Length: 328
Image (tube, rainbow, N blue to C red; front, side, top):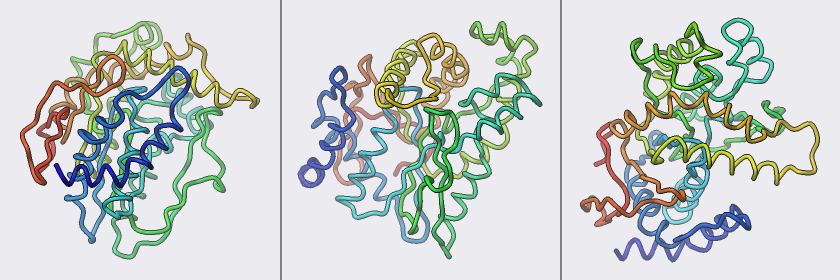
């Protein structure tokens, strides 16, 4: 427990400053101390133990829309850098969306729904694989990482891309579908929402997406050394959280023109493209994750599961461990 307290005292100022930057008048973070001490610091100790100087530890962070992936990954990065002195690179699968033009071509050749970013098949997987290959290389050279602007629904110009100048000890790779598994042909047959019933009657869209999970994304997710999963109670909650996200984006960009900000109906339709994979992940990803973090209705971590102590005499009180990766 002393190690937890020492770490907390060293990182709390930076963590609280970041949390404050993410809060709005309506949305405030509750139980900040408890979240950091009982969850984020123990997870950081676990990640730090897995690192070595030969190659980076690549940890996936998955969770549905609005579950706090960006916030969690940012605070983990702060702790790992400040207390453990590790070089951490945080990257989102969202930044690897294909350009709007590429998705327009894809929608013409495969299915019109593929113009909408989000599902497997709308990311440039080869670019991500190249990133992982280069950070693992013994002869590391600085590289640029794409940056995607959701407000304009397109990739940023190269002068705005992220720059990775030194070899990382840890790569945090976050995204809503990270670690997702493909479905069987039988599971694919029955539509699960109005979008599938009306716009995908012949199953072409969901079959294409499923085949992406079966091939390219399976290869991609095999690159991970571990997986953290932020699990919401149900899909309805995710819809509500996604609506909040869009309102926040609208407030942040209210004085800018030519933006692709969605209204409530747009968001609800948009979320239908995520529904099949997200609901499957509720079942699959629990089994395949290193650590599962259960979220309550207010996007706070539940205090339900008390996990036995593991290395470092740390008891992460609201974490449940899955079987997909070796956590010891």
